[in-house]
Every structure is written in C-alpha cells, then in structure tokens.
Figure 1 (cartoon, rainbow, N blue to C red):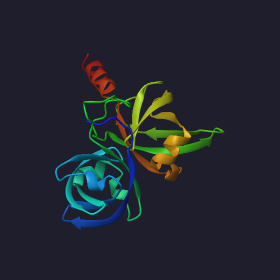
Figure 2: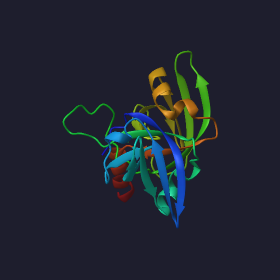
Figure 3: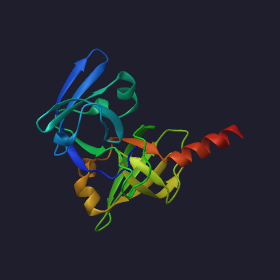
Length: 193
C-alpha cells in the first residue's frame, strides 16, 4: 500500500531484456535504503526490488505489467516517480494507493495558469473519475478538478511540478492511472445491480 506522495525521482540507468521480462536498474537517493523483496511504486506501479548496488536498485516487470503500464516506453535516462510502501505509524498524506495500475491515459493538453499547471487527460476504462475525487497519475496522488466520461483534469502546484516527473510530461505522453479504490468498488457494485 502507498499514499501517492512521491519521495524521489529515480533515473533509469539500464534496461535488460530476459525472455518476456524486463529488468530495470534505477538510480536514486533512496536506493541505499531499500532491501531485496521490498515493494516500491515506480510511476505508480508496484514492483519488487530484486537487486541492489550502491545508489541503484533493480526491479523486474513481467509481460502483463509491460502491456498494461507505461513501463514499456521507458528508456535509459527516463525519470521515474518513486515511493516506498506506506508505514502505518504516521499520517496518510495522500490517499490509499495500491500500486496496481488500472490503465493508461494520454495527456491531451497542458495549460500554464500563472503559478500552477492544468493537465488534461483522456482514457478508456470502465472506471470513472469524480470531480474533487482522488486519482493517481504515475504514482502521484492528485485531486480531480473536472471530470467527464473518459476525460479529466488535474492542477499541479510548483512543488509537485518540481518534485515529480510532471516537469517532463508533454502533450501526447502516456501516464499510468490508478483510480480511487472506493470508487472502483462502488462502480462494481453498481454494475451488478
């Protein structure tokens, strides 16, 4: 479980294909604090640490993960949002995030709002967003500012812009989405009714 509060931006330094799997080596300031078998969210995708070296950690993505997330578009030099798993002895600053990516969205516009930025995304999913509800984009817990079928916007403050990979995001880029867990259960119950 995660909160969607990004701790660090990691840098992809090596990508190694191994059959249907891909091993990613990530350089970060938190890599030295990790341990083998620890869950870490990478752009919102929960991956297990399988290798460690000074200032680097290695994670493996299986074929299904590569198909359902934006991990397959990573290249050496990609900047990745990182968050270690939640500790239950502190405040929950974001919202409950599982690290299970529900799908991809495409950034369709970025508007400079003189001190913040409005990002608009379009997606295809049975899940919906709700105005003032929670959404996780590349692992970042955010509030939806407007919502319609298959599209929504979020506003990014300067701190979030600088301390996540939003500063690298361009129109046309795909992002990982995790919809609010409570909203997913409500949608499922409504579909059964």
